[in-house]
Length: 115
Length: 108
Image (cartoon, rainbow over all chains, first blue to last red; front, side, top):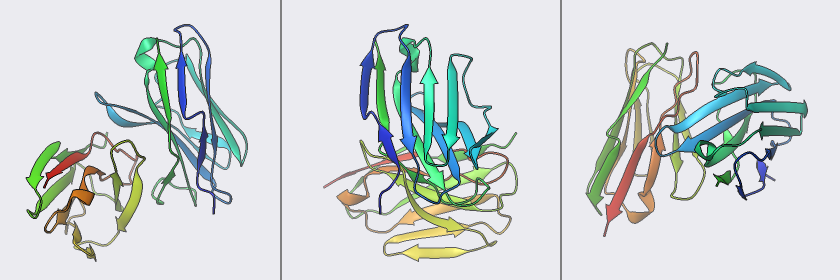
């Protein structure tokens, strides 16, 4: 079975550019999570969707970050404009059920570098 | 808000030594999960504990949930180089907090 699929795997871009990260959750999973991982802050939850609806976006750092889930099989995380401090590994995860207490399945992540 | 503290942040052991990491919450948890992330990889779910005082084993790994459901531990017996990685213990509640975890390194 296919796991969570993220693209691109690596992204290098100059500051000020728009960055779009993509995620396809496991089929049948109805919760989707976006995380950011850095050495300084560890693994942080950015936003959580349930049945395509954003439930908790308190972790989104600022207005430059936005996330959408237009349907059950696709989500995007967009950064516009990007800044060097946004450099991190971004993970998408999905799970069954409507709460945050179900085991999560992570994608391989997108390693983002903003120059 | 809910705080989950994990200690130690780093641990280095010689292969064959035991290793333990601890998670402590400021509030009662409905459950706690453990994940492992290999260097360069993504977090992988290991186990979920739900009941007060619960103990579960996976080969050399022993997971424990405290009686008050506010703390948990992961103990690895006779570590191997394959145990290298970062271990996380997010606890369900108002937020699923992963944080920095405990990074284990093992020298042979």
